[in-house]
Image 1 (cartoon, rainbow, N blue to C red):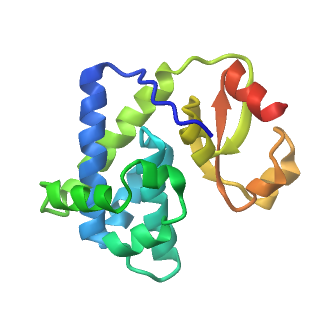
Image 2: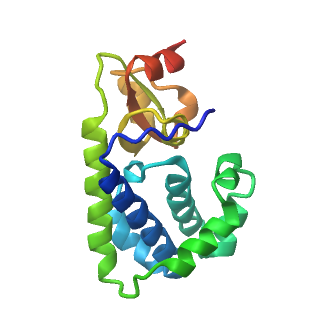
Image 3: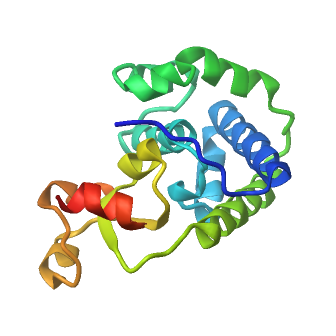
Length: 188
């Protein structure tokens, strides 16, 4: 996988998105109880890049398994994820937690709305061709492919067969990717 970071947002919006995502993740690392508030607004695909998306997903996975997603447990959970490690790993998590200015839980909802809105804007600006394919959200992020909203693939999705969905995506977070390059890479 190659990590492309093609920005389609205006640079001012991209800086805003980067700060908002870092603050959100930093706050969630410090107070994982706020993850439920954030999840009401956020789709993991709203995060601009692979690393932030992966951190957010890891926090949800840890809570789902009964663990508390603090700096150490998130870092341990992602210790074998090369792209996360290349993106900063443990030091990135520590920096997010340390530099986050949010101290009030009521700010999480507004910040989540901002990140969601910027994710929707990013998605609306992505070129849409006639070709689309389904892939894992993390593969779309790692390759920098334009994508739509994500969902967890169920047996019903496979049975409906409206779009070819690889069986190995069952139970994983997937999304539609758009464009000839992305679709060609997946459909070959």
